[in-house]
Image (cartoon, rainbow, N blue to C red):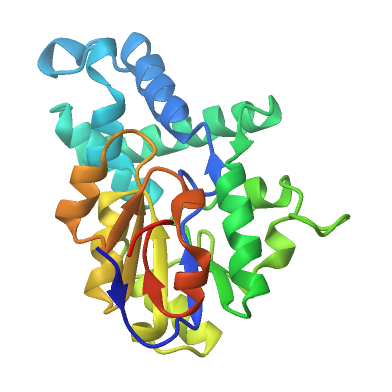
Length: 254
């Protein structure tokens, strides 16, 4: 069902899973497998970890949308790794090293629907910000050409970039999104957050913002349960005319 409010003045985009199909999930999974096969091999019998147990669903539920250290700690706690707080540092460092190798190998791609939606929102005169918990988000955005702006990257098109910005409280706390709204000079209630993670949807709603969920992996029910105002499988499904008028609706809906 479409929902109505006064005109949206800003859109805050998560990056991983919304604009970029990044290798974060692969990096987290491979880094833990490396540790369990090497430095932590003596710990494995004490844990619930098995290579095939680190599923896409585990990534979405436990790690997606969290700052790096929070994600590392949460994953180790999920797999019952002893002394998770201390070992999270090693895990996060191993994951980052693996991710940088994957980036060098160009193991990522832009979501074209996301790039088009950024362009459509900007064409309507709505401010845009990138707000990701990942310190690597800027690397991806710099590598993606801007839609209809030859010579510019997607990062160049944002009015504010808070990718990897240190905050006292990560998602699902709304601090990162509220900081983005403040930098854009827009009140929270006039912002829409575009997110693919449960923690991000919860952060948007906790901050008094509208939440547009992107369910790229058949997880629409999870995003709806987290409080998303509208969930789509692709941002091409969003009715841009309705959006610019202040309504979250799918194309063709009444």
